Image 1 (tube, rainbow, N blue to C red):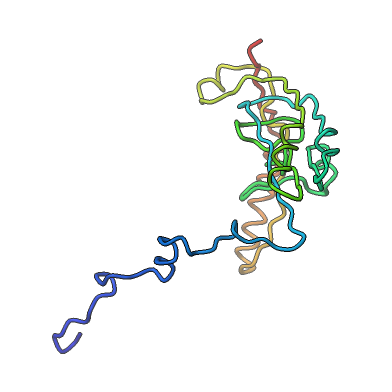
Image 2: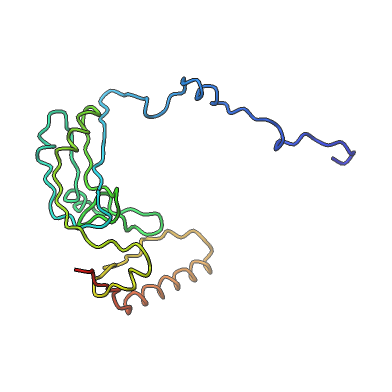
Amino acid sequence: MMDGTAAASPFRSPVTALDGPDKVTGVARYTFDVTLPGMVHAKVLRSPHPHARIVAIDAGRAEALPGVVAVVTGADAIKLPDPYYGVAIRDQPVVGIDKVRYVGDMVAAVAALDEETAYRALALIDVRYDPLLPVTTIDEALAIKNTEIVKELALPPVKIHCSVLAEDAIRAAIGDWKKKQETAKPVAVQAAQ
């Protein structure tokens, strides 16, 4: 302060979280605690493989289980107008379509009337995999020849809100990127047999 007195700093004062007492006493309600009429429970079947081709998925027994509302697999996802998501590049399938790319990758999802039925339905889904060589380091990637890693990289639509000059510069950069992609040779590596 100008008169030489120091104001209390908010950074040195103790702060009590408003929800702290409820959380430590177990009174706080979380989304997981909410039950609504007509609510279904979703569970996800995940890949046990770091890299594998999905050969076949048989979800018939899961779909026939009483209490199961829906089972979603890559065969369903591929029918979507855009079955991919991603922060910068939309390259992640919402559920595995043709392959899994890491341990825990989503292979199928189940919606059921209760959580137990959803878990039981997951156990009834039969997935056949063709394990592929996982590439976990740059050196491994460089040592492998003749297997395509990336088939195609599509540039997602970009909504631009900026000045005309900046917009022109961005469009030019995108155009340059597209030209490089058109003339670039596909990256290829070969998996060890």
